Image 1 (tube, helix red, strand yellow):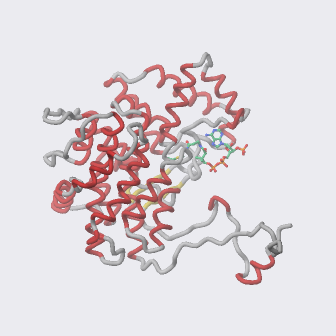
Image 2 (cartoon, helix red, strand yellow):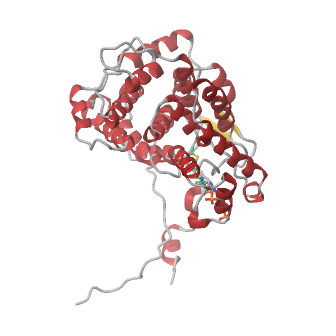
Image 3 (cartoon, rainbow, N blue to C red):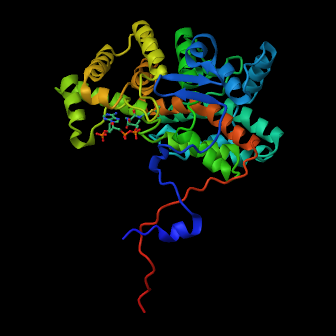
Length: 398
Ligand code: ACO
């Protein structure tokens, strides 16, 4: 039987809160969410204003340093991140060790983890100058690693970054360019990707960010902590949902099922089917990011000629959900991932890359939260308690 008496004896009362439904793990001044009202703000600025007026680079600065940069600060930050895009030549060998069809997320986390071996001058989590170096190294190199992982997965040669381009343009060229041939950045695609990265840039104590903090609380360096965050994001209940949405839409398309019939299966919880891209631990209202993404999808799919049939299926699923008691009572609305996959697909990214794009966006949030923890002194290692349910003492057979 369950006995919590020994635990009570040693520690006093322990809060049992699986999934951290009601437990705050930290104080933070980075991101504010009001899930009931559907509000999201970075450092006090509403997500809608940032998506409309800012850039991903500027938002990264805002999240990490707490204030919008002056023009000069932004230019310096831009030049710093452009100068550090190259990967160590030996790190390139790393990529050839993976199987050809390797999923780019584990490739990404492995390569980020490996950065610790190349930059011993930026590993001390309590030295501000070293943390600064690992910050711009990560911001500059993650897009290069992601583009290499992409090229690897399609069996094409990797491109050295072209630092006359900005972060987003360089990443697009890294993915879709061909060595020694000029690459024209499509400004509509670059702008849309920039906005999507802004929308993913932080989301307070989500699973991957909490992971980054927990690993960092052991005084692990920034590369090690972010690599753990990438692995957390790989999970289908978190960052993997954008990939899962497209798979679901395609399965509905390939079957004879109408979207309405699929929704009946979801409501009946047949084989545990969930409507991917719907529901959120914190938002019990329309995810404000999803609203912006849907607007982008409307514009961009019209321009790029995306998959109208899949977009139509998605919209029909949403229409059913918004009217249906099952979803209304449980306050299940589209989250940021419901429409992103359709846009990424129209941009030319294969499904395997969708979560990588999420990771690129989430990076400044991970860095900002890790730095906030270190700057606050990081005096406590993260160490949850448990309710022991195993055997009481028993004896090894003699
Ligand atoms: N489809 C159908 N039913 C759902 C869904 C869904 N997508 N999400 C939740 N429910 C139901 C559950 O079955 C449960 O019903 P019950 O009370 O009858 O058992 C109820 O709503 C509450 O669900 P929980 O799983 O307890 O909610 P939780 O906060 O733990 O989960 C999560 C949140 C993981 C996001 C969930 O809604 C889900 O699995 N969604 C689909 C995956 C997804 O889109 N993930 C992306 C998350 S956002 C992000 O990372 C950007």
